[in-house]
Amino acid sequence: MRVLLLMLAVSTMLLTMACLRGPSPGAPASSAEEQNTPARGNSTLGLTFAPTPMTTAPPKGTVSQERASPSPVDDTSAVKQERVMFEVVPGTEARYRVKEQLARLNFPTDAVGVTQEVKGTITLGPDNTVVIQGSRLVVDLRTLRSDEGRRDSYIRENTLETARYPLAEFAPTRIVGLPAPLPMSGEVRFQMAGDMTLHGVTRPLTWEVNATFGDQNVTGRATASFRFGDFAMRIPRVFLVLSVEDDIRLEVELRLQRKESGA
Image (cartoon, rainbow, N blue to C red):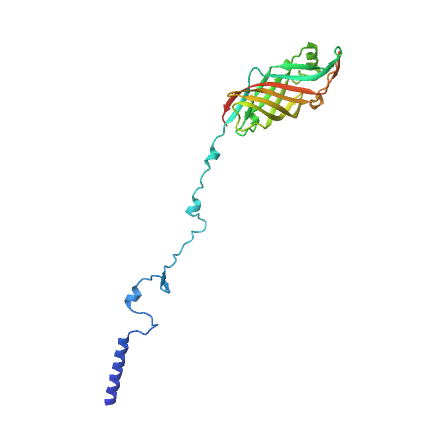
């Protein structure tokens, strides 16, 4: 009995000492205070890192707000560009020159036919590109006159055949050498290329232009040349004319008025 009481006393003393020392190192905390404390992140070498927030991908088939936002609009693409129209005005004159050798003369001379029946417009964009829909020059060939009525009758009836082909038309398609923006004064040389329709035939033709620009008017001269066969015409063969050169030179004394036009 005495031994049993001694063992009970020793056990009580060991239990009391264990409680006084507290939990052993490495043992998990089990108190209610530690279990209810929110996590403050992971700590390594005294540095605390906040936990990385989780991102949730948008449901499949939807577009995020950032991608759905419209991109900025380029306002310059919506600006209407202005055009400039040059209209033929009275004073414009078209003529042809053909060198011929008359029987009564010992030297060749120029046969010249002239008309002021010229109409049309030339329309340019801001970079001097030709606006084809608004550009065409027309000459009434039936009104050509020279210093010899018999020559004029022959040209109308046999060479130009104006009863079938009364008009000559030029449709500009390209201008080379004209500065942009258009000058408001001074003299400029440039080329104007396009399609010439004459005697039922359409062929490309390039004019050399020497023009003087003013505030609202343009004056100058345009010249071009071609052969009779280029437009299916026969070289004239008439009495008292020994020879005619196969070279037709065209000249146009230009008188144009400048008009602003919308795009």
